[in-house]
Length: 322
Image (cartoon, rainbow, N blue to C red; front, top):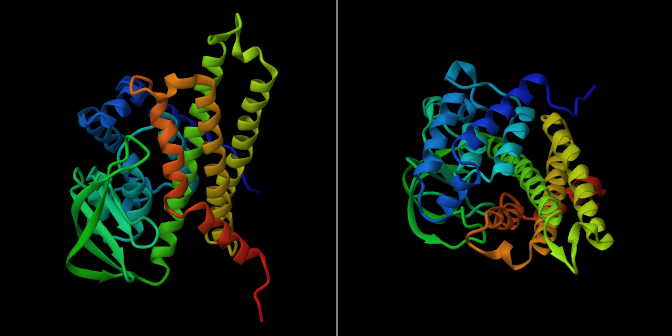
């Protein structure tokens, strides 16, 4: 029987993440990162390394936590809720399945790593900060050298193209597909967390912002919009959990793509609604909402666009042409 709820241990781990982030400054960590001050975010990275989070998908024999995909979902939903900056997805979800054991041990111990994948994620996140940079090209893993920084709709996401250097390491059969599936799942969980945060911010602000002498949260039309966000997130989360529990099953690809699409749609809807509730203040640099407003569309398009994942679902469910 599939369990679509976190275990007591997973809830405790999620609470530990919440406590560490809030104790480090909460959303101020992401705001500082967006403004160019990475020190609080790097300090948070070190704390998570001590917690064992960075070795979540590294085996215990290699110095990691040996966690499951459902553990991954729990962790990345909380990271998304707090808008935690840094290449966690690349270090924790993508790369452990592509690198050797020695490098896995380094990742679990706290090495900051990033990667670009031709055709899927062509730019690497936080390459200027990373000690380990990789480029996946033509079925092989290359070390990468960072080029000029690119712009992103998300203020905490600094992207750069990588140029391959040194000898390439051929990837084993299925290794890249499995790693990309894991990255897509982590992105989906992050989007659910980000959507939940934007909904919470919108509901809270709707209770205090007034128009025509009344809190805007009393207006029926706005209530319906917020309810639509709640429904979208409530449909997305079980799909993410289902995908985590269907690892190695024949329909794994379809489950992960469905989760990614649903989570992306829900987060983008949450962003649009939350911005409408906040009005112009939501755009300002002083308001932390900008962290999630940018994160939703950025991650919805990363690690497989909605079009890519919808096409993969269609190929999976429709009969092949003869």
